[in-house]
Image (cartoon, rainbow, N blue to C red):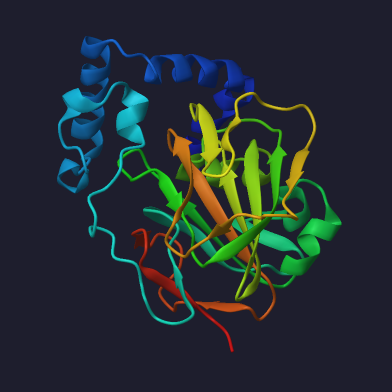
Length: 286
């Protein structure tokens, strides 16, 4: 952590995170053509968004900025790894960290970690299957595709909405804010897969107006004051590997957890590696 990181991060402790995100939601859903086209053009120019990959390359066709931000891709531009037991990247982005869950702790940045119990909403029972397993944290920047897809085929067992702050999840904040991903508001989805339990954690951030899933729709907003859970025992949704499972309305981070000896990450799947949706990032053991 540098002095610059600290100075960048400290003001965030004072900001009204949810109020600012609510205002951003109104702006990003505004359907005024002049406003939304200006906003879209600036984002494309500033971040270098590749519109050649978009199913709809004409910005005039998007009814709002959010409609553009959660745009679909052309078929075939993100090939899905088809090897037996291969784990597919759930998103476009950059690996923030990937490694082992050691005695329940997940590495965030140098000198900082958080527990799987805290990440998953405070339940030791929910976190226990992931003890001494593996994790990966993938950061989605504003230029990235913002729909999230399944790393493996899975049967949904539980969804959890965990309240929290909405700190930025950029590199500087990740290095500076202790327990960042276990402090921000998030949505947890627990699946049964061929590799055993898999948790997909969709972490909110400043200006992330909402998080939604394909089986539920928008989960947040509204935010909640205490942890809220949904159980899926009968007629549980089954999502195939590579199938869309959710999306961020504005960018953030997805964390993937597997249990002990369940999977092996690819040798080069490590911090700062750019990844694309659907590419191989690991392999089911056994």
